[in-house]
Length: 543
Image (cartoon, rainbow, N blue to C red; front, side, top):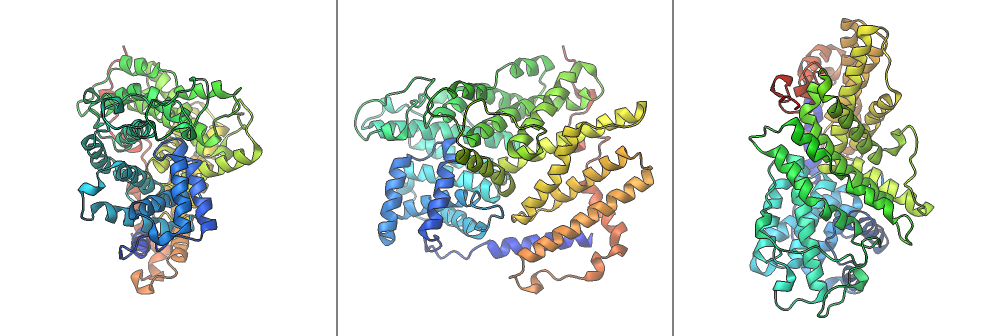
């Protein structure tokens, strides 16, 4: 156990070093404007184009005012700006060099929200800050898997200030205020649904208590702070709201899927699974914008592909175990693998056997930037941005392992090259995450162990030799992670993570293997791979 314990100790020391001692001097850590401009632009061109939180022209005006006189800026805007930069910094470079600043900005936002004067913070700006905080915690890996808890506070605050009521029923609403309330309400619903899927917890959305309408299909620049309704463009026109509206249009069916799966008394039939599967991915609507002057970015396309594909996977995972042995569930096996590949290729296009055209022209500069941003987010982000790719990798590994086992039974094993490519690339992806500051080394160790196991199957290695090969590969992966973490912890006092070289040597291999077996997947037991009870004896009759 010394190797894993050393990794954990290093991780704790690094995290402690990142955690700032808050002095409530908001704005003290904002970088020079040239860097800030790049970070803000990265956020506005990526996640803001999917989850609409800000009115971009208004934000840019306040941003320019801030740089004209930083000392006179409202604290609420400084917090908002810092959260925008915390998210954008995850897209700034491959190694998340601004992670420590991003962590500080997230902590300062949390401190600002819980500080006194609660009632003065019950407004739209505070809701925007809370929504940005949900995204920032995921992009920085600060409890990204616990967002569902924070969403309870955000959703109830939205109810308290009346976001669940349509602005047409409220007094004093200008066009800009009304549309921003509708947009933010849709984003809060989407974030709550996403956190429900991530955590396996029930959605907290009482739609029968809400009457807020859908936002207009309008660009930000066309919204004015005057009375009247926003002019909505035709559905075929691609605007600043098109992607968010696609999510809103599919919201009810995805909410039904989340309730279907996350009910503690889940006894869903396969017939119901197939019925829910029948809804067509709304991401296909993006193809209709190809002939327009504007087209969706690659970031938007990949984000939507991931969001919709994860619902198909979630529907079929409960039947994936049975599908490995029962032909009646073969569709679930096929769908699970196809959607897993789709999610993985969205984040890691380098692993795809062929590069698929988006179906419409995209400027070369925009194409490279968007592709880089989405791939970077898969490396630097946590929560949804890590979980979906990890799930896709696991499903690919399960499918590859079972295919090889089936081939061994009838002759020489052969493997699908596309699945091999994904598993090999998963090693690189998980290592890049550690290099970018992720202190959890299990992902890389598991990826290396899975590749070693598949390699042993392909070479028909004896069981005893195969286990030794797997142990050696896993231990070497652990040592490599230690080297990376020690470099990251270079400016932390050595006593924070004492190292006994003897404990990391070859003599500890047997002890390490006993300790690490708990983190490896037992492919003979699908429950251990998928993380919940999917035993075939409990799967209902398909029809």
